[in-house]
Image 1 (cartoon, rainbow, N blue to C red):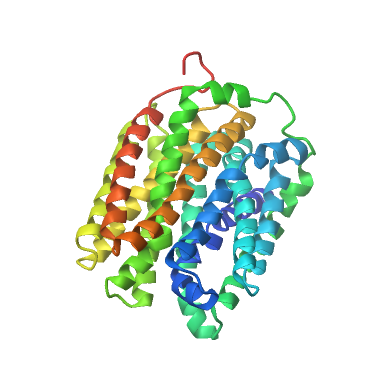
Image 2: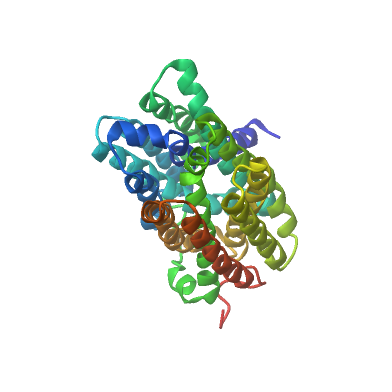
Length: 390
């Protein structure tokens, strides 16, 4: 591998690692944040909700930016804005907490949509492998951040603000590594046909969008509330954080392997359905016996959720034939999908508040998973985006 290729891959992986810490790093610190800022459970859940709403609403900026400045420069800008947002949100007061979170999430939204196009543009012969690498890095970033924020807080003596501000460092390092790609890219590299009309008219788009949204909803619910569920079940804060880290860690390996295997087949239905069933089993374990072999439930949940996320992104990259159409499909699927997902943490917090426990919210999550299985069945079938009657 040449130095140029090594820098490309390293920058790509480190950029992907930054797509979740700004969100996942909130969850283990949520109780401390709520107590410090004076937020209710619904208000605490709204931090994640605000970010996931931004993932949906601002995703369509990615194709517009890519057409104007190119995919690589769009990715670089996203990394710099993430760093700005995570620093801003640690300033005093709830308004800047939400504002900084929103700014970081806007950048993540743009990068989320751009990344499948980047895979198609830079690694056209290795879409399966690099999708797995990309998703594994995304999940790895969530794992590292959720696992380390509490230990770093204890070792450094920082409060949640200081620890959260440190998340700007890896974003800046990734921007430095990606800078050579951005400098080489021609402006308007994505100029050409605008495929949104064709993408919006295809049924395939809406099957994929439903899969993306529903699997994201069930993922962000657990990301936002799993440590709190275990805290209220009687486990200490560090163990609750480690359990979240375990389920994220399992997703790293799953996310790398599943796209490589599933991409070899015309139909991804068996993989999508299997992933959904495992996620159902993980939810059932947390619902019925949260403190009985909790590590087992986290492994099952991690395999199911990691595979579901990886498959949704793999299908986005496989169905279209070129990076421009991939970016358009990614914009639709992730934007609408994340708006759907944004309801999860907020409604979970609300159901917890009115029901006084976690049984009702978790049963609602199981209902969403049934819908995810149906959407996955249709999204995973062989199809080529843009063919008539699709």
